[in-house]
Amino acid sequence: GDSVTQMEGPVTLSEEAFLTINCTYTATGYPSLFWYVQYPGEGLQLLLKATKADDKGSNKGFEATYRKETTSFHLEKGSVQVSDSAVYFCALRYASKIIFGSGTRLSIRP
Amino acid sequence: DVKVTQSSRYLVKRTGEKVFLECVQDMDHENMFWYRQDPGLGLRLIYFSYDVKMKEKGDIPEGYSVSREKKERFSLILESASTNQTSMYLCASSEGIETQYFGPGTRLLVL
Image (cartoon, rainbow over all chains, first blue to last red; front, side, top):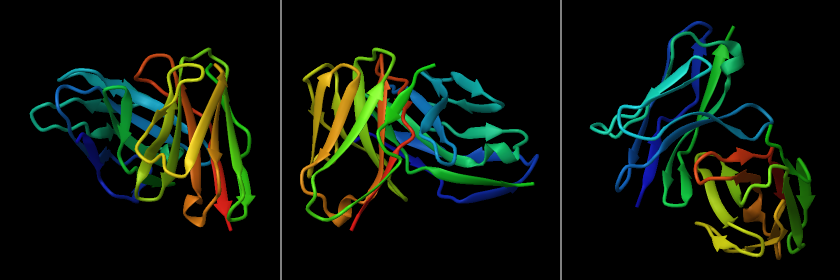
C-alpha cells in the first residue's frame, strides 16, 4: 500500500545552518505531497504542498520539490532559526485519506 | 482563520471508563478526522466523517467509536478505556480532501 518514509530524528542543528529532512514515498498513481509542522504544544499545521511532479512548494523559507523519478519530497531550508524547532511530518494524499510519515523532531541551538 | 478546538488538553482516566473526546470546528467543513499520535508511529487515522451522521473506519478503529450529530462537532468515544489507548489524540477538519486543519490535541493517560 501507499506509504511515506522520512528520516528519523532527532535532528539538532545550530542556528543559520542548512537543513534537509529526507522524505520518500511509495504510491500508485500520482499523489499530492505535503509537509506539516507541529510546534510544541500545538496541533499540526500545513507548511507546504505540491500536487504534481516537478512542482516546488515553499513557505516561511522552507522548500520541497516533488521528484517523481526518485519518489522523494525532501524538505530544505537555507538558514534555520531557533523558532523552527518543531516536529515535521511528510505526508501524501491517497484517495480520500492522508498518510503521514512518523515525524522528524528538529531542534535548533542558538 | 480556521479554528479547531478540542475539549481537553490533558485527561486522566481509569481502565474500563467510558471516555468522550470532543472536537468542534468553526469553518463549516464537511470532513472531520480523528487521529492518534504515538512516538515513532506518526499519525494513525482512527475514524473520519464526510457528513453529519456519516462515519468511516480508518486504519485503527478497534476500541473506538465516533458520533457526528452536528456538522461542526465530531466526538471520539472510547467505550472501555485501556492502557494501550494512552496517547495524543488529534482532531482535524477539511473542506476538500487535501489540506487538513488540526486542533491542539488531547493527551490522554489511562491508568
